[in-house]
Amino acid sequence: EPVSSNTFASLGIQLNPQPTTFAVPKPSAPSPQKQMPAQQVKSTPDSNQNSSPSAPGTFQIGQAIGEAFSFYKSNILPSIAWLILVIIMGWIPVVNLIIPLMGVNFYTCVRNFRATGQKMSLGELFDFSRALDKIIGPIVVGIFIAIGYFCLVIPGIILTCMWAFTPCIQGDQPELSFFNAMKESQRYAKGNYIKIFLLVIILAIIAFLGFILLGIGALVTVPVAHVALYCAYDQCKPK
Image 1 (cartoon, one colour):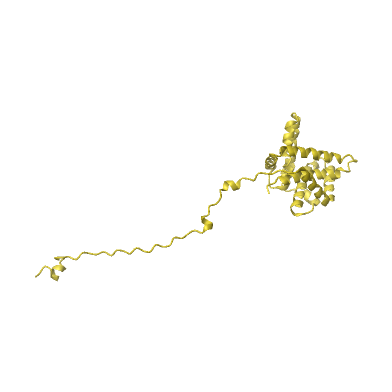
Image 2 (image 1 turned 180 degrees about the vertical axis):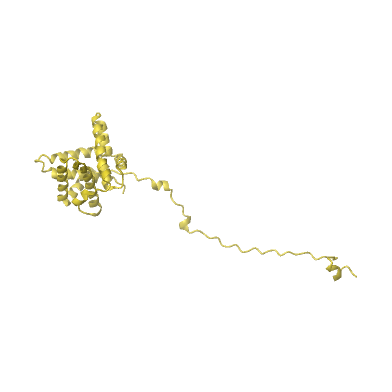
């Protein structure tokens, strides 16, 4: 029987064995890659640059005083009432500790008027939220400044300029502690020391002139001097 017969083929013996073929898988079509939207691919700016606070600006003394008179004309009675209350409470022990708090709240009233036109009310002067910071802050600043003037005057002038805006910042940002408000005041004073010094002198003269006419003029000049200090601070705020 020939070797090429089926009998030998069933035994695995072939003269010319057929080569075994293997199926080669066809390459699958490449799936389109998902492209990220342009908004996601776009790189974000460095977060460290955004987190740094903007540098404060400067202020104009004449503009600050003019804005203070505008506030006074719109809030005459509450401004006079604030000053009278401060004078009366100043003679009452323990109660006079509320005076710094009322001063900070007075600046909050100025902030609200400048921001929204909301007129001042006496009830706002007795806002006791964060009362400890509002009371201690101005007292601590006053003590340090007094010590500075006792030490050859020059340190007192520097500390006055450095921390002049502290109660204004407390009234504008009541969430800050008095210590952080002092640091913020120092930041705002940077580059404005001479202007702040001149402003304090001018406001002191204006307030003093009010006492010449039996003190009646002080009902105008003292509130105006306080408001002018806040207006100067407000002008320095980054816009």
